[in-house]
Length: 242
Image (cartoon, rainbow, N blue to C red):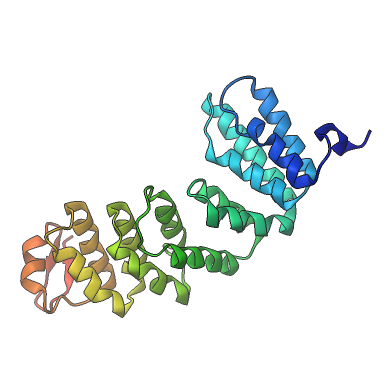
């Protein structure tokens, strides 16, 4: 009997789909789930990778088992090498969950420049349009934070107008250190808007401090909003005491 005969007939995609329910089952005997993960990995097909990726989108108890299984799944996907890149990228595009795992996998399979290209392309596709769960945007913005690439600032800028405060804060953390001139006015508008939450304003002050953009045109409002240790100096720059 061949190794794939245990899965029944059909294409690798069909066999993987038949096992998906077991791969993602949250309750029952964990050995059933773990065996299914191994069986799907043995199919060595793009569709199998998509099913394995679905394991990252569910959480099981106990947490130690969940963590062990996810690390095992991560390694099984990595073992498939470059053949995993396309399905992992597709999962990142299609799924609202497990974005951090997808990025971690891509970072293990590709050079950083290529992963940045995938992340920025996905952020560009998402834009600041409304999403019920902002986690994916926050994860992607967190991934590009602190990295140097000409694509980053342009793609992060629209998220200053996102519906989610968490996304706005993540975008501010990207943009502050980059000193991207087109972000000056949007950051000042966000800081001084009456509709902006206080925690977003705090992060906007930090971003203006990091970027060293002047507050010209907004000085009075910025001074009224600045709280210790931040203040506006005589040159119109946000400074930090201490």
